[in-house]
Image 1 (cartoon, each protein chain N blue to C red):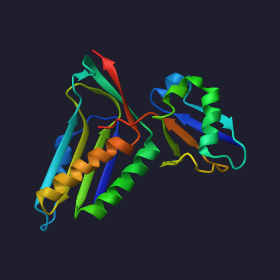
Image 2 (image 1 turned 90 degrees about the vertical axis):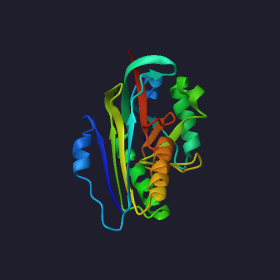
Image 3 (image 1 turned 180 degrees about the vertical axis):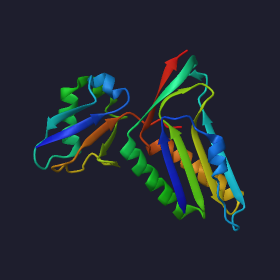
Image 4 (image 1 turned 180 degrees about the horizontal axis):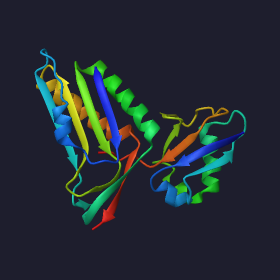
Length: 81
Length: 130
């Protein structure tokens, strides 16, 4: 399957785009998919530890199993207020 | 618990917000918090901050926070307005109103809401140089 991934804040500058669509094997975890993203956008690698990850509008742990129709969002720590 | 959330590009109209306030007879505390853009960021002078939001997730995460707030404190109502886009120095970026029976609950709930917002609500800021 192919999974849409959205970038926010300065992650858009690091990737050069606001969104992309990348391949994910059936039954792969968010952690597996993140490796694909980091391979495609190596400038994000330095942000891996602080990166926040959401599927749809919910934060999800790295062992979340991706399914058809999921949309992933990656962004740096939030700064509202 | 009543709640109202507004994410807006428009300046925060404090007068209109205060005019629309509502409090029942059982409530004894209404507090307002105003977050204002500072003139410095990381020690450098700035002219403004540009706020970016992941709107759908912002709405969902605030809903989760309001639900948790209702479980923790006897808050009657909360209203929250957050600016997005460019907000100049000295202009408000955040307005919050919390109504509760007593001041302790109102202050605690408001403080908690702001702290949690800064932890989970996907809004980011980018300083614009002065």
